[in-house]
Length: 295
Image (cartoon, rainbow, N blue to C red; front, side):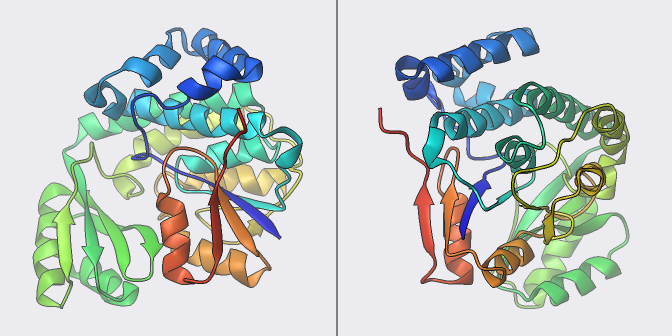
């Protein structure tokens, strides 16, 4: 079975999507439509903006979404997904790819999500840290002993987990995790504590937008971050997407479940190759590809 996966925040780069804009009429049409929806020329920031401009959450999230969904649209008849998934932000790209959401509604939700998360980040100092070389249960147990908010946020692959929470709590957890044998415990340069209880205000704000958006019957199942299992019911998909902002991204479990359910290959749709590398950490022999359009 062919699986398609969609990356999240962090995969952006200057120039992303310009080749599609310059050579594919459909891509140009969708980029210009995005400019109208957002009220500013995001395609110009994507193509010519600085690294700092692209790092802003309100730019990064819609930019990655646009690159992924427009690339998928340009694949045409060769894009036949039998299962999809997306890492964090990428889940909304996946929902457009499997026809649960329209392009327009997906972009609108992504932008509202980005603004709500930015606001939550500014309301309280918070951060995330990458923990390398410890079992998940050890990290979970140590986080539970820390005073303050610090939780597992991204289960990226076996031996790699990102924690999220209040600055002091994350720093204290890093010290204890190193003492417990972590090879690395590095505080990340991020805007805030994504996928933690500190995103509750953003979750509440986004929930209203999600509830007001039409979710259609998908053409194939999506493996959602919250459940790490195949979901096809629009109402359940909607609820899982609402929970996603404050719940951990169970990507390790998602990859394992997709392979268990019969995925024979995975194609990453969007900038970068991060997700392909994570699949290789689960199964070195698993076939991974980057989505490409013959220009």
